[in-house]
Length: 172
Image (cartoon, rainbow, N blue to C red):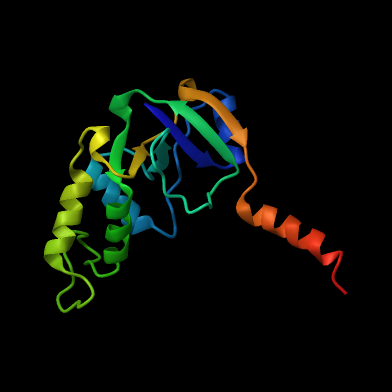
């Protein structure tokens, strides 16, 4: 399966040395990622996110890294989730018990337990690629043998800053 993932230059250097890349635990989304790892039966500290090449993606024009890495990953190493379902789960997560992501805290008016259970079931359910509207690829690690090519990119913020500097030349 052809997957595009956006990573830092440091990740690309690890792969260029021929080493397998394992993501480090996220400080910001530690609980959410631990829940996803549990739901998908992954064996890693932090999932690696990617998009399926040629399918609709929802990056919002912003990416988290400076390098787009195209991977040819054997299907057995790819888990898929529906992007919108993952976003909804993350929104609900703040209403879950700290001990169990499956349990909505009693009295939470902004989160419905039945809806939350459906989100969890959807995230766990692996189905064929064509059944996803906006698929999100999840990997445990990146093997350097999977790298097809990479491209260094400039994120939107850098481009906007350069544009602003050019415009400021003409302002008094």
